[in-house]
Length: 224
Image (cartoon, rainbow, N blue to C red; front, side, top):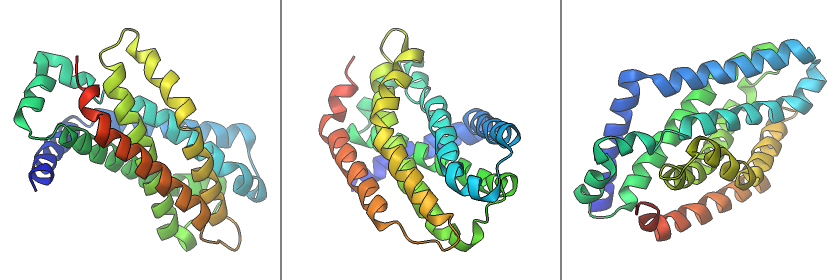
């Protein structure tokens, strides 16, 4: 119970901080929108091409946006040594990671939901028929992006060349998530959508493994 209460308090802090400034959300939405529009006008794909290549382009945009959003995850805690104060205020350091993970997943999912209609219009791919399934896939993919990115953000925040280190560590580790999310999304954008249980199971396994590792070793990642 203490873990959940501490996580709830820290999550409220993360949400208030972001929605007060809206820096990350605005920057991420504009970034993804620019990529989606640019690809649309560059390739001018047909409906069949959009169904084939659209999911890959969409998740690549989400990946780069996630690296942009996750970069300052722990950097803001370096100011006035806030991270040390947070560690002293909670019983379990995992609450810090859990709150940031929940906030990052929520922000990514919100960004994806806002831009999914734009993708549907620009690429002429209907999404309403499989919208609940797409939201589930995006949630699982966003959780995979967030759990990995949050852990690596804690590592890179205290390193030199941190702006370069996070993408270098993040991109190789997230390749399985990208493949599974892209394949799952592609299965839902065909004429006769099918629920991609195999890829959802893979995403679930990835999320559970990395979340367990973060729970076991997260305390060491916060050490200076």
